[in-house]
Image 1 (spheres, helix red, strand yellow):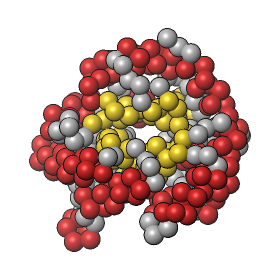
Image 2 (cartoon, rainbow, N blue to C red):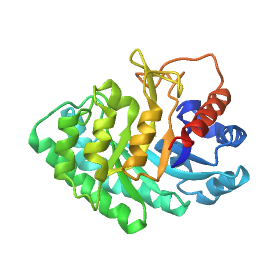
Image 3 (spheres, rainbow, N blue to C red):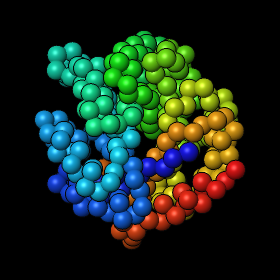
Image 4 (cartoon, rainbow, N blue to C red):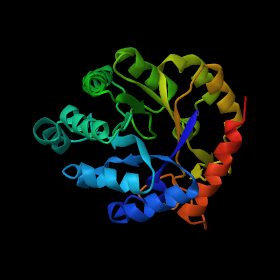
Length: 277
C-alpha cells in the first residue's frame, strides 16, 4: 500500500494563496503524494502548467481530488440550481479532466450534507448520476470512487449497500472512509470483508470521543485494518486525513501541533503500519 496526505490539514479557507508553503511543508514531512479538495484546484483550471510547476518544484504527485456534490435537492431553490445551473455530471467531468491533465489518478465524490432522504427514487437519481460520472472518468483514465459521509443519505451499511446495488461496478465504486464509517457505527473489518470487491480507495482518519483526531491517537485499530486490507489484496493508495483545527469541518478535533508537525507524526505512524504483514 502507498500513503499520501490530504492538505485539508492546512484548512480550506484561503488555502490556494498558501499552496507553495503547503507543498513545501508536505515535502519536508516526507510525503511525495497528496490529495486535495476541489476548491484548491479551481483557480488553476486555466493554468494547469502553473499547478504542475508547483508540484514539480516540491517533488509532489496529486493522487486524487475530493469533490462534494449536491445530487439531491434540499429545497425548491436547490432544485432550480440543480436543473438550470449546477449540472453535476458536467461539473465532475471537468474536475476529472483536470485530474487527468496533471497526472492524477482518482476522483473522489462526496454526497450532499443535510440530505437524509431514504426514498428509493433518491438513491436511483444518485446512482444514475454516479454511473454517468463514472463513465466520463473511465474515458479519461481516472478512477471514480464514492465517499460515504456523515449526515448524508449514504452513511450507514444499508444505505451504502443500496447505492452499491444500484451502481455499475465498472463505473463507480467506494472509498473506505474509516472516520465517517466508525462514527456511523460501521464495523470496519466486516465492511472490508463484505464489500472488498467495491473498495477502490481508502481514507485513514482517526476518531476519539466523536471528533476527528491525528492519526494513531484515537480509537481506531489501524494495524487490524491494515491486515484486513492486505488480506483482500488491496494494494493501492491510502490517504491520511488529519482533520483537526479546521472550523469548516463539523467533526474536526483540535491540536496544539502545527500542520507540519502533524504531517511528520502521521508519516512516522504510516511507516510503522507499512511494516505490518
